[in-house]
Length: 380
Image (cartoon, rainbow, N blue to C red; front, side, top):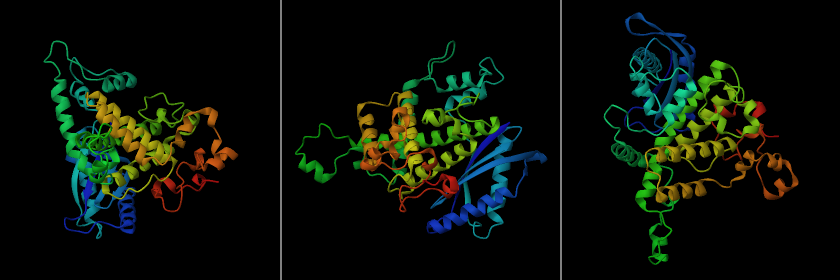
């Protein structure tokens, strides 16, 4: 069975964070290490095949997603931990790094319940589409069993989200509609339309919570498109997100595109959390943020946490991060080609043709090399 193992590796404690050049070097070292491995010896001599890997480096370390074919989840985790540990040890520049976590993340949470029930009366449906529908539906009380405590689960998730809020380092509360001290004084107490700090904090934490979900689901989409060697328009298996991108290009959403888009999401959300984000870099990031906001709202709604205050905070966040909403025209076929028209030129619309999605809007924008290194991706 194929597993996706998430490995979070960190630089040594007390070591200065890596600059962009060091991060590029770390990516090369780690990826070269994986490229030299075809199979991993797991526990008791069990061989685990290494299928693929994606590396995303941030100032304090790296997030690795490793695809392996293993007989069981435990074998996958132990084998990947072993090979990553060896990879770090044999590189002088990475020798002081350490593994923070190494685990197979099964998402959404009900997927774990399905796996636990695989040999019992609650075995999940064989059809992947039915499983997806089951996993994404809102939890309900179980028949003939102790009821699902939705309120307790909502409280627990809310606590997790609030705890994660501080990880969204690039965005102060004012980005979510909270009035700063000067604005508060100028409003002279009329704060009817201001977002409360608690709603802003929950919205921030929900974005971090949902980013992890989004990345895992996109990994599953990449795997599905890779295994079927097809596009989102022709894929028989269920897809989490690529069907939500502009439909007119669905025949071009193949596994290669999916990998580039996934790397873009990881790069964007990494900048959100490491404090380095300044502006969205390209059309792909604008679409990635749209997916992230949708995932965030769905997740909040699932647990009954999307009230008016949190919704307003997310709307303020979107208004402040997006420079414009031109990317929405990609969902309107009547607007196809407007960026290349005289009207588009007059309005200053950036190129939105498919070939330009991963092209930086200008020289000051950052696009991850793994997404931007295709010559045909350059805007013309």
